[in-house]
Structures are given as C-alpha cells and as structure tokens.
Length: 496
Image (tube, rainbow, N blue to C red):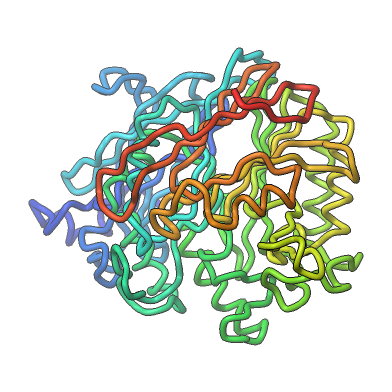
C-alpha cells in the first residue's frame, strides 16, 4: 500500500484532535528476540471491551521507533505499520538490523497519541560465548482465579526474556464465586475471543511484564478449549470439522494479541507454533506444540489407571515432523544446554493418593504420560546428552524432578506453577507427601502461585521457585520457595 493510501484511509481519525480514550489501552509487548531484533506489538483499542475495540472499520497507520536509550535521543530504527480491522487493529513489526546482546527501547504513535515505553533485549550471536543467561518462566493466568501480582514482580526481574507456557486466557464463562469475573459467556466466536484477550490484556500488572521483557509465547489448551487435542474437543463433542472452525477463531485471536512473527500467522485452522532460538553457545531453546497435532487422549482422558491405548505406537503428542525436528536439534549439540520449553508434564508420575491401597498406577492422561511410546522414544534420545532441561507448565503447581530412560536419569524437568489459576493455594497440598513417596524421581511439590527464574552458566543451571502468599487480593508478597541446581553433565537435582 502506498504512503498516500495510508494517509488517506483514516481520515476520520485525522479529523479528531483527541481520542475518546487512550488508544494504547492494551499496552505494548515484544517477543521472539534474535541477535538482530525482535517483534514489537500493540493493538489500537480505545474502548477495548466494545465491538472492534471502539475502532472504525478502516486501516490506520501507526508509527513506531526503536532507540538505544529511554529518552529516545538515539533512534536506530523507525517506520510506519498498518493496523487493519481484519486483525483487530493489531500491529506486529519485525524489527531487524539491531546490534546483538543489548537492550533497546520501543514505542508507538497514532493520531497524536503515544504509547508507553517497552524494553527488549537482542540475543547474542550464535557464535558468541555468553557467560550467563537469566530467563523467566510463567503461564496459566485465570483472570477469575486471582490477581496478576506475580507479573508485577516478574516485571522487576533482570531477565533476558520470558518463556510463557500457555493458558494466557481461559475460555470459561463467569464462575461463582470468583476474585474477578470474566466478561461474556464461554468463548465460541472470534469476537468472543477478542473481547476476552482485551479483558486480560487490560490488566496493569500483565502490561508491566510485557513492557519490561520480550516473551516467547506458546499456547496450551485454554486458549482454545479445555484439554483439546488435535481435531478433538471433549466439552461439547463437536465434530472435527466444526471444531476446526472454533480453533480457527481462537488461533486468529491469539495471533492478534501476541508478540509473534509472521511465521506464526494462522492459515485456516492451523498455526506454526513450534520453533527454536539460540542464545549464543550457551543455550539452544526449542519451543514445542503439544496440542495441535496430538491424537486424542487415551482411556477417555483424566487421571486414571492406564488402559492399553497409553502404549499404542500410533498415539502421539507431537507430530512426526515436530519429533524429527526436535531430535535433530538435540543431537546437534550446538550449545552447552538443550532447553525443551513446552506445555504439559513429561514426567509420568503416579498420582494415587494412597499408593498402598489403589490397584494400579494412576496417570495424568492429558500429559506426556498418556503417550508412552513417543515419550520413551524421546527420553531415549536424550540419553547421553546430559545437558537437557525441560521447562513445563499446566499443572498449577511447582514441581522439580528427573526424567528417566528406563532406570537411568537423562534430563531434569522444572514445572512452573500458575500466575493465578486455582487461587491462593498453600505450600504443601494434602496429597503432596503421598505424591513424593510414590515418585522418587520427584524432588519438590508446592501449591502456591508465582513464576520461575533460571540462572544459567556454561556449567550450571539454577531454577528459582518464586511464590506469592496470596492472589485473592492485590499486593501479594513474593518470596523464594526453593532453588534447585543442575550440574552440566549430571542430570541430577540438588537444593542450592
């Protein structure tokens, strides 16, 4: 589109000297950093909960700039992007040509109004040898479950980036009682999803975290429907062709509200979610998609005694292509640490509350444990690497444990709790002692809300479990529940 066309299109906006409300009501965000840039995002929505965000159905030019300093005295990149009504007036700019391994600041301007400031760091070059890395891990943020206080604390951390493991929104209608109520009913249409994202992204603490750090975004189930798997959803038993329409709306709204690259633009009911990144020679990061291509959960889903389908060679939680991609990346040994960043637990825990009384091991069939042949195949390929860290969400609890290929530990898994889902929680759930007793590979169980930070050096990985005393009211106090260290070359855990 020509510059003249850009200027002519939003005449209604040029005629207004002031907006009815702040057009950048949903904040700014950055994501998918690389050595020469990152994505910067915003959405023009002066009335975020109104249809179309309170915007007219016309394209709008939005100016953007990136600088090396907060005062923007040294602007190093700038331009204009088009906010289109077909994409809810969202903006995704893939900034390139920046210098590696340093912080930058960015902002937007539209119709005489300027956004708040965002900050993002570029990655080191792939050939670089960084001495350290500090990253954050967060997700599972049910608006109705509590306040996003953890994001306020996460914003204050000194991090290179944040990995978000999904459940950015929840699709449910209003619950009762709740800390904060959803606007609207259970999500079905594109407009429903857009409104829900607008409600979540209006949260000031979430906006602070996005403005402070670049995020690598993935999604899990609640961005679409609880425990969905491939073309299957169990809530309403929708036929696959109908559910694909539902999924298409959910994927479009996710893309519209996430700081992701054009490569993640949805094509119908499909979206490219798995992808990788390199932080110099220190860490190779592989972000998985464990929902879109999986076969339906065996044994009719849930926490159950395993049926024969758990061991079916045809069952898979990631596609054959994704599995081959991950295997190639692990075997390249391109970095000191291989980081598998994904959504659902890889440890096959025994969830019986009384292992001595129940007849057989109980599994979470919505996790990797429901797909045992592919799980064991992946763990066997991790054997001998001695540098694999798995980062996981979904469970709404903190766990730390070992992954075994048969009897031999081959990797370490850190499971992060939720930002707010399931409410305040407590330090040790009532089932915690039995869970630890039944699963010797498990070293930590904690049922508080919060996030993880990870301190990485060439020879050691440390994960800090940061927890809040409450999310049911604002102002929760943050503390460090535990730190676990892993020595490179030894897939084992020790309290640090």
